[in-house]
Image (tube, rainbow, N blue to C red; front, side, top):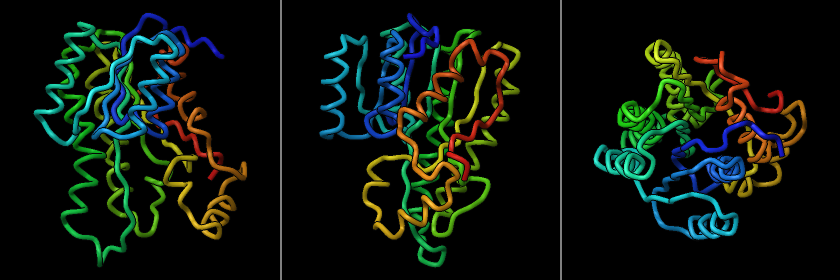
Length: 246
């Protein structure tokens, strides 16, 4: 295991119970980071993650919170403040996705995806800023397809492109304080969503990737840990593509 020099720091990870978020939570815990991870609802994945963290002896807490709810976000950050006092690391990973051609895309679904993937990041950043010390590091999880576009994912890709713009702007605001904020633009990753793809669709996707395979969630988490570490202390406002060469 690579030592990223994060031991003793405190972290909040949104959307931490599954896929990439889960890998980030476990990766931080293995580095000796104290972690609060939020999840939208109870699930077997939450129970399994809690058990794994306990078996590791990690200093971790799982909190149910909806990042689209201002009240929930304030409660979540209140929990972080009570537990840690300050917050060294923030990872905005919570996101939802669906597939729909534009003519069938309802306003309700557009708002659900934008509210979770973009407004949720805004709400968490706004609530967290007062807890961030001057050397804090933030990573927002974006999408490798955000600047290319994908058919039937207009709402999702729009939200993820917005995350890139938000990151650039917040880098300017946070920079004078020495706080760094970057985006990891993740490519196709072996999550529940990928597991449910028909074989023919999966083969089409693999053909687009230079490395010929989807990422393991731990490979995305590794890039996040790098950006959170002092090895990236002069990196801010950047978008790091971790997509296998799409």
